[in-house]
Amino acid sequence: MKADSPSPAGDATPRDPVERAHLKDPGDASHVIHRYPADPAFDGLLQRFWIPVWSVPPGQEAPQRVLQYPVSLVVVSADYARFYGVVSVLSTTTLTGTGWAVGVMCAPAAGFLVAGGPMSDHTDRHVDVAEVLGPAGETLTARVRAAMAPDPHAPAAHAAAMDAFGDALRPLLPVDADGELVNRVVAYVEGDREVLRVAQVCERFGLSERALQRLVHRRLGLTPKWLIQRRRLQEAAERLREGPAGLAGVAASLGYADQAHLTRDFARVTGVPPGQFAARYAAGSSRGARPPVS
Image 1 (tube, rainbow, N blue to C red):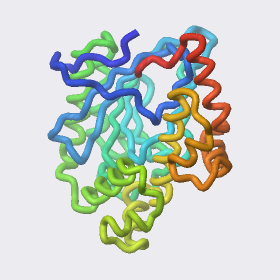
Image 2: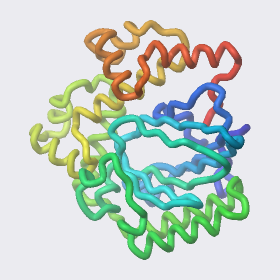
Image 3: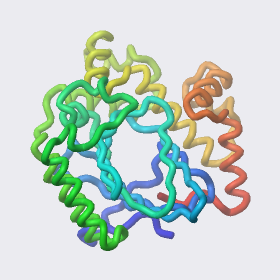
């Protein structure tokens, strides 16, 4: 089952690889995810689209667990249309029956612009798209559903749905100065594993700790410390899924004081100790059921 689709225009643009945030269980063949980058015209506002299409046998469930990135989401399905703030813990969506969704992962700057105010009001919660976008949200929902209804796997349907998102969100451009700054802050934290302390972020951007706290809280609904911890946990999950690795070595490579510290953090957020998490993927690999690219 192919998880990455051709681009709507039929070009050879590579799709996104497996996201380290998605803690997909080994052998889970419940869905396929079509992924597309956002149009460059939306740089700084939108990052990527993902379009899952699923089919789960009657009476069964397929939980999808995600260590979400520090960004908001806009998602339209046949049953709902929602604006999501950042989920500070583990995000779980349980798939049942058959269905589809079209979602856009916003840039860190975008949530404040979509919501029209501080993202701290939306942490760990979602609202109907029309609540934040008004009539444009209603039009977006109708257009996406009309595009996807005939064949949710069709590239033409994906292109039409993404065009609808673009038309709804284009009025938010250009991104403001604080938005550009928070985009750079998040890119720095996510892109440099040597960033282990909030003081490093303050020094890099010439901000006081209080100013950085205010920026991240207003634009993301989080704290700078959370940004660093989330990146480390995503990296830990990625390494634990790749194959045999001593927990002490993983902890040291990610800057944890010791294995116990990694174990506490990982289990608190994911609900599963890292050793048990790694064993689950090792068992899937030995059965030839490693997670497919999605």
